[in-house]
Image (cartoon, rainbow, N blue to C red; front, top):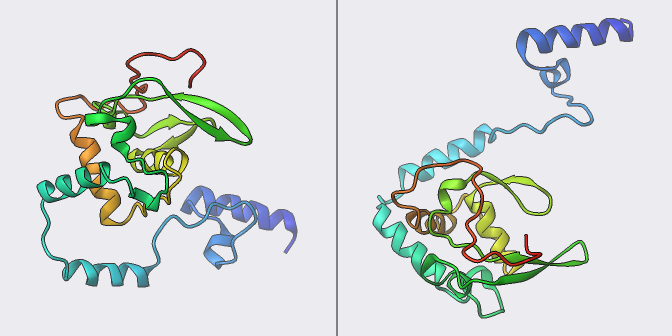
Length: 189
């Protein structure tokens, strides 16, 4: 079969079935998007685990999240800082924090977290990538606290998101909203 016929067949398969012939054959192709789904065997293990899980409550998650927010060892960081160091009571201590990005030092304004959760997902950071609330939590843990990121599929990450989300009670969801900086700092992102 000629290369032209294969390409036309592949284009028809994509148009009709939404998948490429390479994907159907399981061979993949360079530059192809990785499969976004969890493998079936992992799903089965997750189902089994979920069936054996003890019930949880939002109140318990909120309490665990608040404890993490105030924990100076969050992310096994060695700075002695907690989220509350910069976001006292969920607000902002004001000012800006220094961060390094690709060898450059930058100042980043410290936003309040009150009402912040309703703005996610949003485009954030110097790379201008779409980030959800868990991504932002991990960015702060890694960048400013010099700690390890939380696995977003585990309870601690969900608990921290629950607490930070609680700081937005009564606010309307506004996807992609701007961060709220009480006192803008000249030159800070």
